[in-house]
Image 1 (cartoon, rainbow, N blue to C red):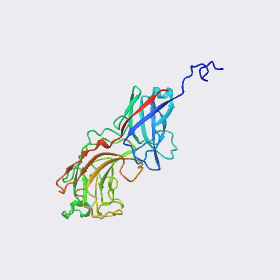
Image 2: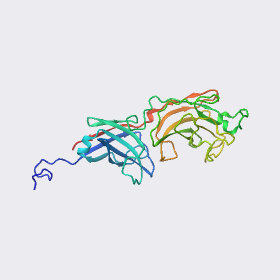
Image 3: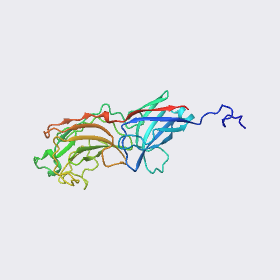
Image 4: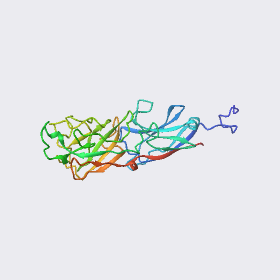
Length: 291
């Protein structure tokens, strides 16, 4: 009837959608089985703003999304998750990567805004070269410590010394040594003072005479991947700690790499400090544009 302000005849209609613009840097291609999904939080409830992928150059497949205007105006927070593709669950996954609180019409995005992965501004840690897993219990050091890496400080027993946040459900830490053909995983872990998740596994690179110390790490004696020659000499190689989604979108290191270092030439009792690598973390803003 044109009198109720919804059919555009009387100039009083309210647009039902508004635009959410994403300006995000540092995201990476998740591969074919996962997509990014944006969410706005309104009164504690998550509403999807849409899915997108990212190509090898970091460009978003879509960066402007039409969202219910009332919901968008009421949103307190934006959250970015990683979702399976296809996705049978309409709710956000546990892989909440970055978030931002709206201040006016924009939100600055970071991992350290809840419920993002966490605050890594104080991330530190050490590692040392030692290869105990090819030595039977009680035997002497057999002199090939350049073939193993362990995260912590050497001693009897070695001690954990990561300063890293406890990760929320849906994430794990993973160690890496850059080999001759690419990154080699030392295993995933969520605690710093116990063996990591591949200790003793038949697929492990480590020796089979000894499980190794109660900290994460790996020796490189067995199961070399194509292009690698074991025993692997770790001296001078790049060492990385990454944060991986669970389930993991790829066998390669994920985009979050809070710690990185280059190994020196001295084996234990020498230890080496990791360097902070927060420049690798995603940044950006999201903006709501009322139309």
